[in-house]
Image (cartoon, rainbow, N blue to C red; front, top):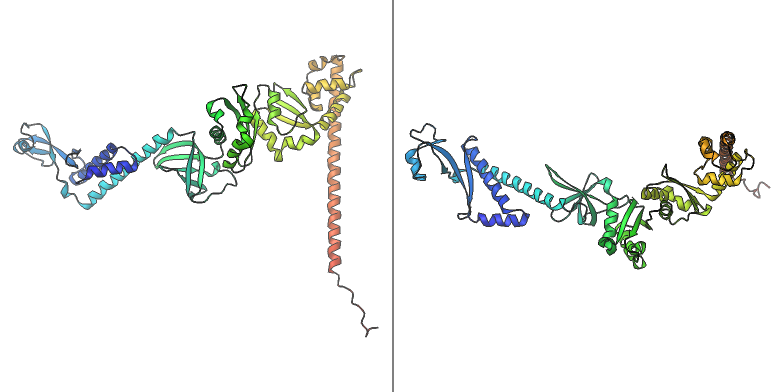
Length: 457
């Protein structure tokens, strides 16, 4: 074992673990190997001798006058060779000659050492990366396992599960990737570092890296909503009145936000100003759509948002994405309606309240402002709320509720008839198109008439 100390120091340096861990593993391995040779019940102690550069094994025996078991006992005279002060009843350590150990025992010792070193490596990786949970790390794609991506972080390997991968992002071996450290687990197979590119924290951490004002705490991200690979919304606020939070995040000519967009591979990002006023906040969250009016229901924490007709599709977004992200960002239920739809609703409400003499459009507008946004709502509302309107008593309120229920049924019938009419028109159009296609097909299959020849003439 000459030069063993130097080998231990080199392994400790290469593996990044404490030399004491390797020495403990070596001592334990030699102890197990010796017990396989001498018996599992044998009391053996292993010590690393730095001066000699070897692991010394000592077998403890009891000093007796008459030896009956040579594996556990030693005579007094023989004991004096190891310890001149030994007496009957003492236990002394007798050094074991390891040169007699066979190849199998040496292999056993090697396996124990490798196992202990791996355990020490696992503990080291866990201690290092548990403090990095919540950070963004850089790595290189190494291989793919059942949809997951194994990423080399240098000192350790991490896994990017399929559910944490952004749709439509493709990687190949040796590609560089940045991801958020979602969690660090310690299990029997080793420390598992789980990464994510879909979480909201990935988005906010990227902004913190690109925007110094966020890193310094001048600008704060109050909320964020994200549909990975598609679109995100970030609400920001500033603690300094002289700093524009949206401008700070966008950067000169959009340089800062573009850096985040490029890292997320083209994901669209809307940066909106946060506001303590729910109405103002929701209007900002629905950008780039413009809002005409907001009707708030604090009890239900919901809003009816009225937008111009030409802004309706923009406010809703493709497949409802814009309004869906706005709901996630603000925490409010949002129902978007066009101005023409609200005018139509106001007419229905005005007709319902017109059963009371002197009531009409103005009262319908008041009902809209109080959150009555359908005839069904009017039919179900409390009589006390209606009696608060000028000129309406309990009898008039009951009449309004009855009329609203009748109109709701009428409106439902008209809408159903309109849908059936539209379906019939669509079926007729499809049938006509099919007949035209069939006629065109049959005409093209008819053989062309033969031209008369000179002989037939």
